[in-house]
Image (cartoon, rainbow, N blue to C red; front, side, top):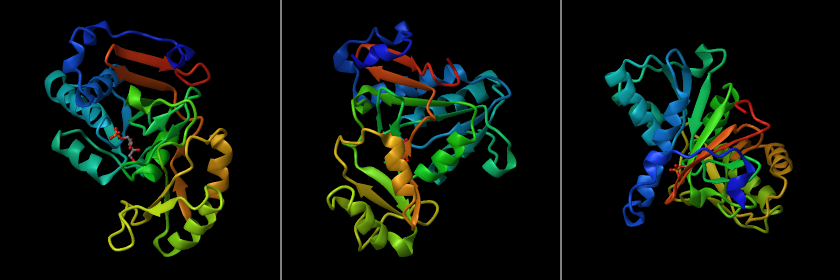
Length: 254
Ligand code: 5RP
């Protein structure tokens, strides 16, 4: 059973609510807040993007204001930058630091080997840059994100605007044509890097994510692919029965 592949710690304080009160939003909030335990004074923290890590960022803002927590953050998207600024979280640019202590981010899917699909929010390239510049990565997610094999969630690939059709045709050869321009041709979704996103429907068949990451990244016109392999150290998972923290035994926080 999936949950038993890593070390498990229970945050018993969160299991007392009856199940009917524990909607998805509540689960996101619990996972997001639980990750803040890993943040302490003096840290440089990568701030992810999405509706789960939003709660991490809000809690960090609260601790800065109520508990005088001293951290600086590096946002992974414009939306996160705006949120963090509204909470008075001091921000720096990734190019102004050598290494970050920690990145906390969400995921669209994760597997038992701590591989991730990210980019549902379109921020995958900067998320990967920030995660790779960090000494550790913690993922916050509800348990609907866990899968045996990655790929049910359409794999986001960021592409240069002028090259999207070429990349679409190349990736289509790998997944039988199921590659869609996010937002459609009339009003495509534009990333913070002013690129496009292709959502690639591989289905739950991505058995060797590192191979697929290399193959897709070798296609001219690709900016980056939303496969995160060998980067994630901890996954904090919320479910109706509480919070489990999986610690990657091959990771940097084991
Ligand atoms: C944004 C991401 C998000 O982390 C991912 O989409 C998960 O978001 P959410 O917590 O809203 O489900 O990769 O690019």
